[in-house]
Amino acid sequence: MYPKNRLEALTDGIFAVAMTLLVLDLRIPDEIGRPTDEASLVHALWALTPKLIPYLLSFYLLGVSWLSLIKVRSRSEVVGAGYARWCLLYLLFVTLLPFSTVVMGRFTAYAAATALYAANIGLVAATGFLLMSVLPDPVRDAHWLDRRVSLVVLFASCVLTIVLSFITPGNALWALALNLAAGPTARVYALFARAA
Image: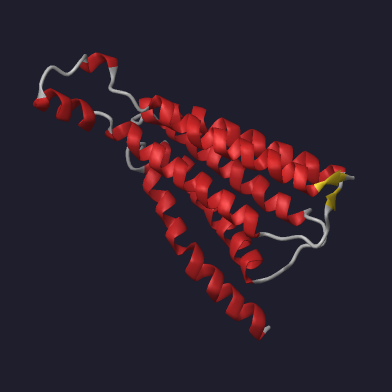
């Protein structure tokens, strides 16, 4: 058995570092050179757009994932070895997100970059779902259900993104917009669950 609060502290630290590392790749591309006037600076900043979108998406994903994790509650103060192993695997995929974000930002037009990025996010979603499944004595409230539905929608949108990346790599990330439907989907699911 492991104290749950120690895993939570590790999780908080890893999320903080991963979210900070994301910003390190946001720099003016070397091929543009050093801006010499206002117009060249604006041009250089505009050239950051392909890197900025994956950065914002990754930061949002990590932030929402962390906020959701702290809202999922357990009545137990200790966790078993199975939960601890899933937690470490989950955190492994979280620590890889800055890398896949850099690859996505640098090689936006390539299917492999988009697929890698979506696979990384999908693995975070899948292990997050499994982590919730082995949480000892969870409080199964509205947030619990919302989180589980959101993770399924996130995973499904990542699979769709991977498929689309080989068809239209420049537009494949739009499949992640399906996550905007996660909240309404969870509410509909809750209504059906109560009626059953």
